[in-house]
Length: 381
Image (tube, rainbow, N blue to C red):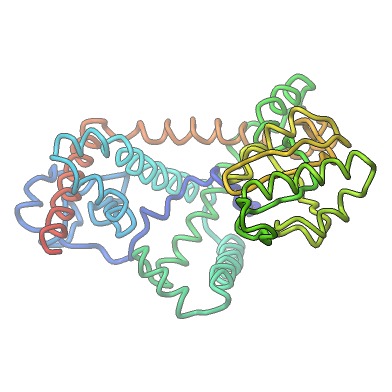
């Protein structure tokens, strides 16, 4: 009997969508809703009460399993601001993707279960892995079992259905792993292309300037002559400080004595600043910093109720971490993309096994139900 390796989760590679999870009890259907279901889909269904269903192999997907609380909350704002035709156009593609993913998950699990067979070894491995996932889930809520249980309820699950869901996910992911192409060597060209695609987002060291600043604030200036305005006194002080700096006095010491800025005690030294990060009135300093080189002084610079004198300490142009330093991250991205492309293709092939007409009819039913529920909640507010 063939054993299988348990595959760790790999981000978006997982085809199992939490939105599709629900309790393990089958809902019932109204007579009116049962009338919508093709005869082949009615076999084994309970009597009257819940929603139109979509048959997938030997299982069924109900509208209640698709329209979970998170899904309803996601689509509700769109539904409440649109007529049905607008809502269908906006929400339809996303809902169809949710349904297609759920269909793929079921078919995937059915295929994985057939190939894995049964036996004590497989069941024991599944139980062990499921127990680890359950502990990890609770740990995500700082070990608070009650909070974890509450989160499960919001997803439409209890602990029993959560464990069953985990078993299916583990088995299905292992099956996916075995269907994906063998890992082929990564070429230098692939590395360079992927690095170039990633570098702006992940490996960029942005342009920065580091400076010292004497920030003369009119509102904090001591008035020495009542016949002279604060603005004029501030200008005279700035000119005097510029003269002293040109004569070689220490910028940091003058900043400690005369600056009203919050970095005065540190000699006016600011931390490195990125373009666009400064709020008014300090944003003028970015342009001034571009005009001068490290060691040079700019000023006086008038900006509203402030007069600035700025000394540029350092200017760093935008740069990137070299490929050699981030090669492992780039390789991981390449492998992830390969697996995602293969798994998406595999998922699409599985989903095509369900007649398009039946999926469309089911999706339309779900859209109408979401729209109706959202409208009812709006009117009940």
